[in-house]
Amino acid sequence: MTTPLRLTTDAGTFDALTAGPADGRGVLLLHGFPEGAVEWEHQLAALGAAGHHAVAPDQRGYSPGVRPDDVDAYRMDALVADVVAVAGQLGWDRFDLVGHDWGAAIGWAVADRHPELLRTFTAVSVPHPRPFADALAADPDQQSRSAYLAMFRQPGQAEGMLLADDAALLRRMLGAAVGPAKLATYLDRLTAPGALTAALNWYRATRPEDVEAGPVDVPTLYVWGSADIGVGPVAAHGTAAWVKGPYEFLALDGVSHWVPEEAPDRLSAALLAHLARHPG
Image (cartoon, rainbow, N blue to C red; front, side, top):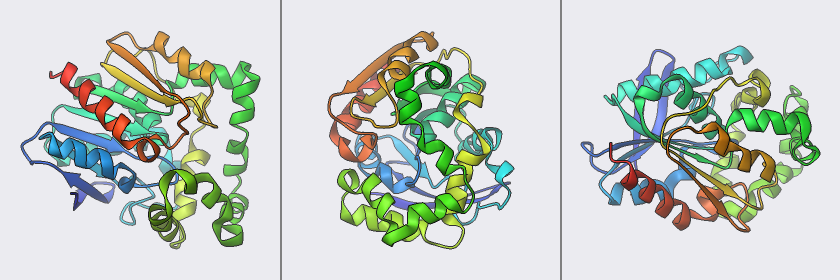
């Protein structure tokens, strides 16, 4: 069971969901596009039941209280600063970080810039930014998979395409993996004034190839679905070379990009096992 939570930082007030005892081991979960904290409902429940204090915020642009208009306000530096600020509001000196999609991209940057804050990191779907950038530059398969990025960066045009015909494109992206109830929740939120533009501003402010991150020393679990249409095997398998600490790669055969919702039990089990391996 999850409980709503509000976290006020210098950037504004983040809406969040939480589960588990307040004195449990802190685990922060970062959602991706075009979802929100509720994408983690299964993992929040599993972590809470295991005695961890799990918190999933609606991130910048997704929380109405942190929705700046300026595209530059969504650059990676600001997204990383939000993670640090939210953890500070929770009173966490060290915590476990979990990220899916854009949340994973932010997580890699946090692990690179603030390793002292993290006990562990779990990346879901999105690989380390360096092999991803290399694949974008040289791998035709990844270039084809990432062709949608150019469309997402077009102001107005992207919003129109995603919402046209009763959000048909968003429905095709998410529907089979997340189910009708969750899909309705996402669409209701994304059609609020300014919400979809704010979410797309992440793509407009930061290109994957521009994210700077070196080798990561934090104990890392990377979970990738072999049927992910956005991330191919070259970048996924190339991530191992960019983790210098303990590393585990879990490939889920036949699972799409939407791992937390399509394979909730397998992800939760892998996450709990990863935390148990690194108590420290």
